[in-house]
Amino acid sequence: MGIIDGVTTNPSLIAKETKSFKEIIKEIVSVVNGPISVEATAEKAENIIKEGEKYSKINKNIVIKVAMNEEGLKAIKELTGIDEAQVINYLKATGLKIGLLINFGAESLEHKRLLRR
Image 1 (cartoon, rainbow, N blue to C red):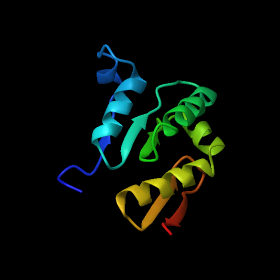
Image 2 (image 1 turned 90 degrees about the horizontal axis):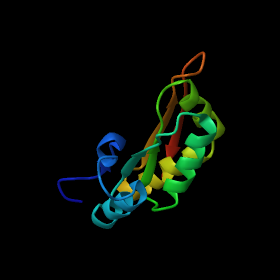
Image 3 (image 1 turned 135 degrees about the horizontal axis):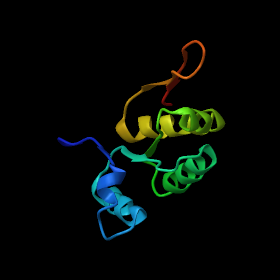
């Protein structure tokens, strides 16, 4: 990889563009060969999950960002297993070997160490 290893999207800035969110993500994927963080903009957990599933199908390098609020935490809890797959895909895309999932929303800190195989 070069100077830039990956990018993160900003829904507020993308909303100002004339192209759709999905079109812009596809353009980013065409030029960035690394992790691409795409933020879910939905407010309810079930819609956050739907957005995450839709955008993660665009490319294996896409990692879904979820707001750290009550609905975001509900979505993350619902996606247990999928989030692990995303971390593994991220590790493969970046060449990193170890990833760590952390849940700050639990009564006590929960974490899981993941290894790329």
